[in-house]
Image 1 (cartoon, rainbow, N blue to C red):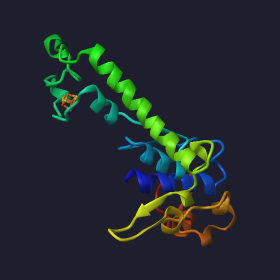
Image 2: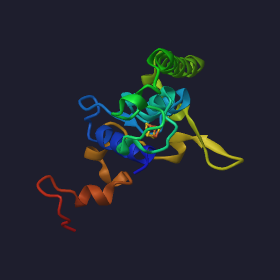
Image 3: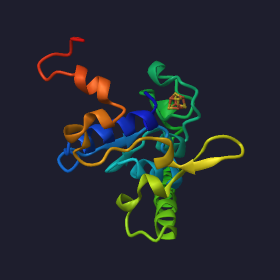
Image 4: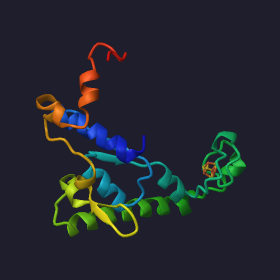
Length: 175
Ligand code: SF4
C-alpha cells in the first residue's frame, strides 16, 4: 500500500479506536524533503524514518548491486578495495548537511504556517494537487475520523463494512 493510503488508514484506525495516544506512528517511504515530512506529520505521523535519501547523500547511484558485493561507489560492499570509494571524511559532511537542511526546510514550513511544532500540522493545513489546474486541502480529499468514532458510530465511517466483518478472535472471513 502506498505510504499515503496506508498512513491514513493506520491513523484512522488508531484515532477511531481512541488508541492514538497509546500507539505511535512512524512514517517511511520516499520521504526526502521538508514538504514530504510536513505532509506525513499532517497525516498523523509521530516521527519519520528515511533510508534511501541518506544512501544518496552518501554517494549511492542506485546501480542496485547491493546484494552482489559489487557496489561501484563502495557504499554497500564487503570488498576492501571497493570500500575505498567511500571517503568518509568527504561523505560524512554531505550526509550531515542533507539531514540539517531537510530538517531546516521542515522548520521553515512549520514556522510559515504559524505553528510551533510539526505535530500541530493538520490535514487541513496541507494541500494535494489533483491535476494540473486544481489542488485541495487534504481533509477535503480523504476522510479523517474523529477520536473514538469507530467505536461510537462506525456506520458513519467508510470503514463500516470492514468494521462489521472484523472479529477479535480470527482473521478468517465470517461474512
Ligand atoms: S550497489 Fe551501491 S550504488 Fe548501487 S544501489 Fe547499492 S549502495 Fe547504491
